[in-house]
Length: 430
Ligand SMILES: Cc1cc2nc3c(=O)[nH]c(=O)nc-3n(C[C@H](O)[C@H](O)[C@H](O)COP(=O)(O)OP(=O)(O)OC[C@H]3O[C@@H](n4cnc5c(N)ncnc54)[C@H](O)[C@@H]3O)c2cc1C
Image 1: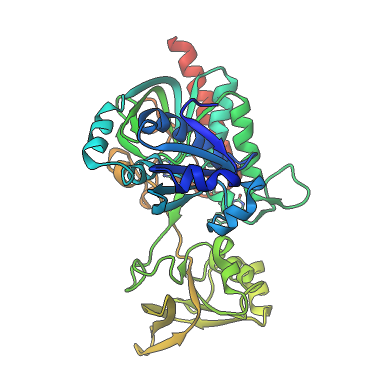
Image 2 (image 1 turned 45 degrees about the vertical axis):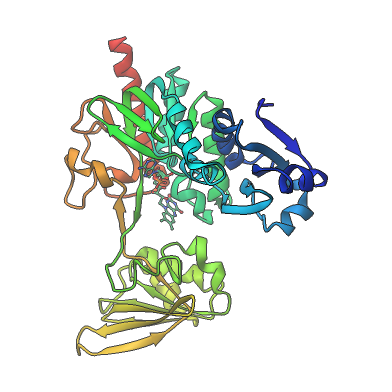
């Protein structure tokens, strides 16, 4: 047990939380990877803030009534109390260190916050292989590197697992006779990496990235120096740039059917797109929604023939070809109307709906580092056959790399190649 952290039960809540000056309370569970990721931040922060704020932990499974009363439905959840009253945010899931610090600072005087901030010692860590991104590509690279006895760290801005951890079922990853849950597949991969000795820095922010010298700073205080850096940041849905899209993302506009289709039970949904993702995800959405209208700019779908046939045969799906969205309109708390243009007649009409899913392809998660690399015409990093980039000792793998097909198997393959190459190159130089 950490010296500045105490464990309580619901019977202690009144005295320990409501009658105390400043408290952060962590509802945790066992066998909970996000709880472990939080513990790695909670404990060091208790060393810094522990004299000013009481750090408490409460086991959610054994204190369900209290959790329910306080509106806590997942682990971990952090609650902040000042003088017995709730303040700040209720933080859950992959909680970032910066979010915890921001809320802790609400509990103490401003001058003291400033004093404590300067007391935070910078940490420096060395490793042989630093992997940025903990999806299937990054985890495969990390497993191979750690099994080659290289000190390996995986840094992810979220919890490990990448896109697959939010994919409902995966039916094409070899080794599973029945479709496997994406979450479980990635949980196993992350545990395999951990077992091989990989260290994780999860739900962190990369605040500086010097790829030429292979130094990165996370959360503004830990510098990681590596001999080899493997970039595995994956890709994200491409925005279509239509009025209202950015503002209403998460308020009726979604890019992930697996994550959000369940919210549209018995509702009417509009899907924008006509490729494989749009058609396959529309079929999935019909398990919940009453009706799906696919709005597509061309006269025909671009998806593979088998998916097209299933979609045309599905009575819950209708199609609006040669139309493009021009505006998303919110009513109340969610998008309820989509203005579309008929691309032939150039006329506008408004469609009513309960929500919109957009599937307009993906873009690499390269943001601030893109200009340092040789990229292909779509903005993905060019590599050689061993996954080297144009920067010495920096590799790119998985969905960020230029390639024809982006799948779990191709991501895993890239990770394998990069890690074996890195390991062989390190053997020569050491
Ligand atoms: C809806 C959907 C369904 C799919 N279904 C299948 C399927 O059934 N079978 C199949 O084979 N493939 C499927 N795919 C494709 C597959 O998910 C990807 O090809 C695969 O996940 C790519 O792996 P990756 O490790 O390169 O990237 P990702 O899985 O995207 O992982 C990237 C990781 O990097 C992290 N990251 C991003 N930016 C940063 C940063 N700046 N700093 C730190 N960390 C960062 C992210 O948090 C993430 O954890 C599907 C994709 C989608 C969108």
